[in-house]
Length: 308
Image (cartoon, rainbow, N blue to C red; front, side, top):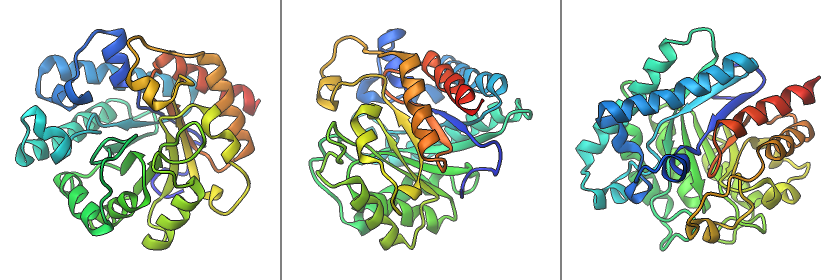
């Protein structure tokens, strides 16, 4: 699988930091933006604790780890209301990658990949307008170009809702010679928020990019929302990762929630492990909204038990 080392067979990824910060630790994140943390000593120290926790789990479990930069909304339109311009954002993206690189340098015994985390231009769950492929490429190229001179191991585009944006991101990453991972989100019916089916989205992106994405993932959905969608098929062979929500709630319900639904960590781990046993090409598992290190540890444990 392009973008990941040949070993180990499983990599763990964590994308639940923002909900953990807001609901568990009482941090305010205007615009759901965690990227301002890279600008302060306290913020950088907190990010490093998340990275170190993941590295420690990888060390204990024997699994690899993908470190994700806190840059999901560090793009022009999402950051502008917070007072950030393009040059400032470019430096933040570079600093975010540098922070991950520093954590990686301190853990030579754990297989680590560094991922520049890219999010959608508009609301992931209800995009008010859809870009054309050229528009998406030009828009997201700005964030990718910012780190081109000190590149991460890969670019991961998370929580995408339609194929054209994914195609544009893939083109932009290829232009900078960076492996790219495309992660679509789905609603309770297993379809993207725009109504497109997951098979159609993956097939369309591959056709329009000559198969550029290293692999595809599903993120920001509970396994109950997508398990019935997954079946043996050529498009399924391209899915290499599942990064799941703790909650069975819909995206609308989660957006309006005043308390955190952290689900059942052990059950989530077992569900993801079972899917990995069914689809052996899957090499990345992790937690998204509502998850914390309990969920990641449960995933690691369930996978170890499944391999026994």
